[in-house]
Image 1 (cartoon, rainbow, N blue to C red):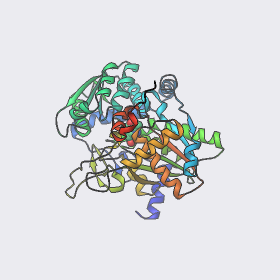
Image 2: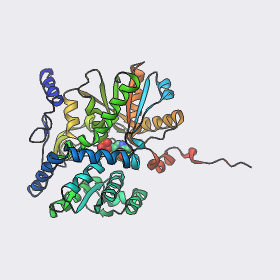
Image 3: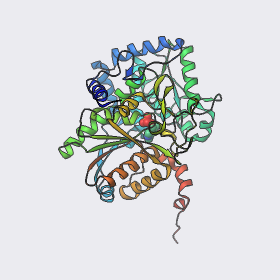
Image 4: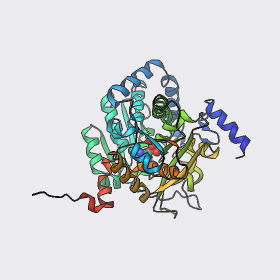
Length: 415
Ligand SMILES: *Cc1c(COP(=O)(O)O)cnc(C)c1O
């Protein structure tokens, strides 16, 4: 893409042209779905247009975000990390949102939308179980029954989250087909929706999928960036030099970035999972290493081999372990508005430890990728103001952390 073309697309993005009527973000996005799904997607799009920015809906959502989710989440200056890095650093604390991550913003907003649309039940997919837990909680609050599809492999790996979903009243269906992980769970959730499009609402968990999901999820997650921008202005009188977030499907990142896209002086950086390294199947660095293609209903960038087969991925953080990415990120990269880099498993672990020791905050392994990317940037660009989206808390990662840091779990007994 040449400079002129990029500038035109950026101006259109800032002007609110994207997604366009066909659900496109420039060349990316759209709706690549079987004919049987089109009526349900069209009905959902009409519902989003009708309710999302309707004042009664916005008032109810705002009320629930305050009273139940605990928003606004704090913006925390972290002076010890800043001193270590030679920077001024602030964390946007989505780890303090109800259920422990940003996912609740989307789950609650869509559950309220499902209710407005007269849905009798909600369907969701989940990988590690974080989106399943957020959806189960939101559906209990709103009062709609909820079925969560989860790969059979993940059901075994993530037993505590399966129990949390059950406690919150959700039905969890283990998926035995395909790869028996997140990809198979998404396919199964779509299948259920196709068979019951009148009564079911499919509550998708990231800024991916066919139109209108990437747009709907961006709008619901943008509360992160709107709050952070206002809090930063109030606390410092200015804007950050850079805003940094981790990127799996891209929902917390697009939520943080979107309100800053028009601020030309604010650099934006997304950090993907560099995993064990650059080899095929060793990472989930989709934007860094992928090529354009269609996955789960949308034209974006994905990790595929030379024959166009979707690649296996790896990341120490389950939430970043996905071969695709939302189409708006593909556009933001193509026009050069956001830089996408990666952090490896071991860099993320190191950043997690540093954040625990320096600030008394245990970040999620996903969020630790943002910390690692920000730290590297700070070292190359001394004395800057850095805003980091801390997408979630790390309590869920304790089994992984005990394996990674065996000595740390032993206790000392006193006599
Ligand atoms: C799910 C998850 C992510 C990754 O999802 P995005 O859609 O890319 O935001 C990041 N952080 C946490 C804590 C998560 O639970």
